Length: 153
Image 1 (cartoon, rainbow, N blue to C red):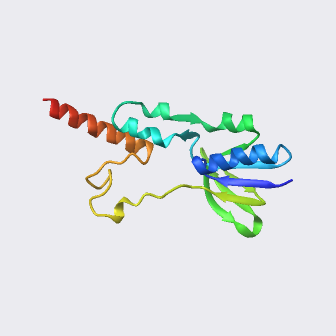
Image 2: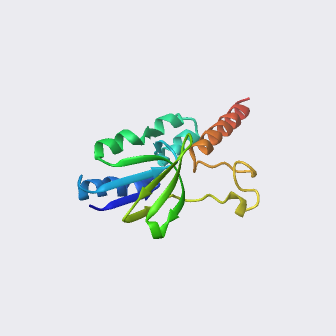
Image 3: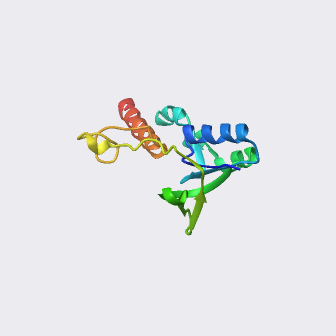
């Protein structure tokens, strides 16, 4: 029996886990570790950003999908990869720690946004909007709708 652990449940981590679950079968253990309980369909955030869709419609819970596919889901933040022990240490949401053993490890954590890398860029400390994260898309929507209302006056 092989143990595969995947850190991250975005497009890459989710696709890898589900395909591996199908390809390897029930005699192997696939575990996905993710800090969020939901999968977010990022391409739809463009519609969130202009007020055409609520952000909630772009998300669905991960655990039921994995359960149906025979994939184990651990909700929490991977804090360490202990390579010599072949173990991922997970800080569970709500407290506590989990340790996930693996024979094979997939790291699919996605991008790290670096708005600070360009002066004036970004929704928090800059002069631009973003739809790269769900909360950014909501903030972009609010700013867009405020501007539309201002222009309508």
